[in-house]
Amino acid sequence: MTNFTLVKLGADGTFGVTSPIDGEYIGSVDRASAADIDAAIAQSERAFEEWRTVPAPRRGEFVRVIAEVAREHKEELGALISLENGKITSEALGEVQEWIDVCDFAVGLSRQLYGLTIASERPDHRMMEQWHPLGPVGVITAFNFPMAVWAWNAMLAFVCGNSVIWKPSEKTPFCALACQRVVELAAERFGGVPDGLSAVVMGARPAGEQLAADPRLPLVSATGSVPMGRAVAKTVAGRLGRCLLELGGNNAVIVTPSADLDLALRGIVFSAVGTAGQRCTSLRRLIVHESKMRDLVDRLTRAYGSLAVGDPREPGTLVGPLIDEDAGAAMLSAIEAAIASGGELLVGGVRVVEGVPAGGVYMQPAIVKIDHSSPIVREETFAPLLYVSTYWDFDEAIAMNNAVPQGLSSAIFTEDMREAERFLSAAGSDCGIANVNIGTSGAEIGGAFGGEKDTGGGRESGSDSWKSYMRRTTNTVNYGNSLPLAQGVKFDT
Ligand code: UN1
Image (cartoon, rainbow, N blue to C red; front, side, top):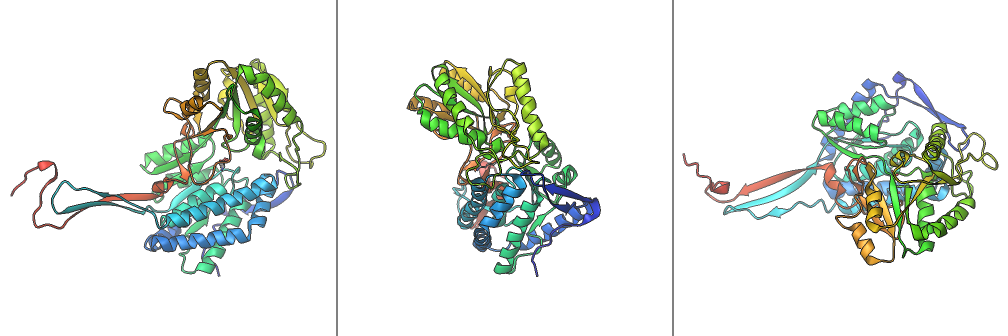
């Protein structure tokens, strides 16, 4: 007996999934047809109508049980992420932990969905606001965080009283099925959760387009490429729905003359090569003061030379495979473009074939010294490719940080508090995330996550991101015997 219906009808064909580790076949998944998705949305709507009247702290209890089940299965879930996405074990477990963390956050939140009380200008009147559940939420996610990004959305959506209908990446459908199974087990343990509160629809672009176009979904939260986000935004805006977008990043670190280079080195290497450079928050641009360039580059090239690239399940491996052949080709062609525009390849940038499983795309992480104004530097290449450029003047460094279309994450390494504060100020980094003396990636769930410009403007996960998943009503109550009008308007009949 399960409380959830998984939409998995083969009407629109099936698609196979292989592991990026060695190209081995994992299994195949049925694609949902347009009619299947339509039915799933209808069911999601019915689930919402029931769930929205369950008291929020009780909804939080359900999310607490989800966290319990996820904790019990953390190892298997992590292993599945490694198998299907290629992340090293520690990062895969970290991703499951990110899901568990956001559950804990959401449980607390379920007793804190606060609205304001507002002073009324009229006698014997009271004003307040309430936050109500919004409706079924469409969630579209990418391969690179196949569980955590859905969890940021779904765990918050559930405590906010919404149902969730999820289209995962076609590259990582089994991670989505595992998440759905965890929710299902939690629902069995909890009891009374409406059917269809959580649904997964498998499909490619048309499935995402269908979610974006359906007026029964007041909110569509999408993570992925900038072109995908633009398409979703256009469709959702056309029906005056709400979008929450978390799109590309082109994240920079500034290293100033006073920087602690040991610290900087560790922060830079994790952000640039962790997850094989396939995080939205991965470090792509290093902006180094001229006086530090030689020293830092020496240390970096040495560190890159000793990186263990290989099977992500082996202890000691730091860099696993890229997701597929296209990703490897994109990295090589970005390096070519960088060299063509005068860049110098300092280290890496070749495919590793020795000592790695055959059938996977293993790349030696690369560093390219390049003039920051080269067009390729403006592009996000989803691979371990780091561009290094120099600056003389601090204002120039901030301008370089901000000189790309994307605005997700950024960081500065400095011991100078004036520089640090200027970087964080209104005239500093224009990104949604700005850090001091830590790298660009690996954010905690407690903060709002997202960025500006081409990154899409959405905020997910912590802080007050929950407000995107609810609708606000402003209520005015008259407990007097007369009906004074606001703004002093007289309208006596
Ligand atoms: C993403 O790459 O889409 O800050 C999410 C980080 C992770 C989340 C990344 N906590 O790197």
